[in-house]
Amino acid sequence: MFKKILLFLCLLPGAILSASGQDRYEKLDSLMEVYVRSIRTEDEDSKAGEADYMIGAASDSATRQHIALWLFDYYKESRVMGEEAVAIHIYDRWFADGTVPMRSEFDEMDAKLFADFNRSSLIGMQAPKISLFKPCRGRRTVPEDGKASMLWFFDTSCGKCRVEAEVLPSVLEKEAVLPVTFYAVYAGQDRKAWRQFRRSFKVKNPLVKVVHLWDPEIDSDYLRLYGVISTPKLYMVSSSGEIIGRRLEVENLHEMFGLAKIIEDYLDNE
Image (cartoon, rainbow, N blue to C red; front, side):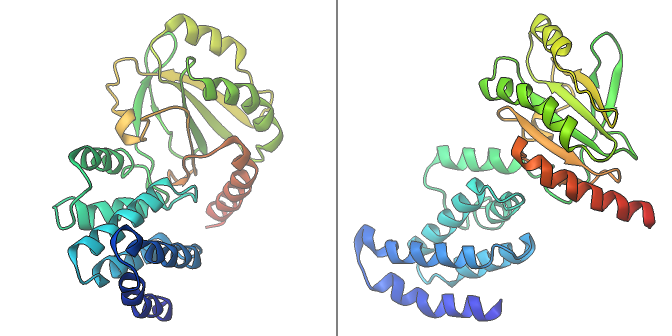
C-alpha cells in the first residue's frame, strides 16, 4: 500500500502543474479515480488513511480543498457497502473544524447531516437499540439480542418501497437460509395505509418472522440512528448485534444471507 501512495505523491505535482485554470484538476481527478479504485479491496481504515495522505500531500489550499471534496463526494456516493465510513472520516478530520472549507454553507450543512445521520450505523458497529410501537399496543425494543435480524424502514407513499414490498416476500422465501426476524418499520403517519400494508405483506417461510412496528412521534430517534433521511433503508444484523449489511438492495440479499450464514455458523462454534 505504501508503494501505491508513494506513486500518487510522485505524480501529484505533475498532474497539478501540467494545466491551468479549471482544467488543472482534470488530470488530478483522473489520477485519484484510478487510485481509489486500486485500493477498493482494502478495509475502510486503510482507505481513510490513504485519503488523509492524499489530502495532506497538497501544497496549496485550493488543491487541498479540491482533493478533500473529491474524495468526500466519491465515498459519500459510493455503492460499495461500507465506504461511506471513509466519507465520515474525511468530514471529521478535515471539514468539521474548518481545516478545509466546504464549497458553501449549504454543502457544509449537507455534509454534517450526512455524517451525523450515518455514523451510528456503520458496518461492524453494534446496531443501535430503538424502542418502537407495535400495531395494537405496547413497545418493542429492536433488534433483539441473540437473533439475526433485518430492519427495513419504509413508507407506503414511497414508490421504491412499494416495488420492494412486492418482491421482498418472494426473495425472503427463496433466500433466507437461517432463522431471521424481519422488522418492517413503517416511517409514515397513515395508520389506515399501514394496516392495509400489514394485511398484504406476508412471507411464507418458517425461517422468517415478520414483525411490524412504527414510531409516529419519532421518539426513538431512529431517523438519525439509522440514517433514514429517505426510504427505503434495509439493514442486516447478526445475532451478536453487529451490523453486517446496510443500504442494502433486494438484489444483494442472496450474498448477504450467505455471509450471514457464515457468521452465524462461526458464532455458534465459538
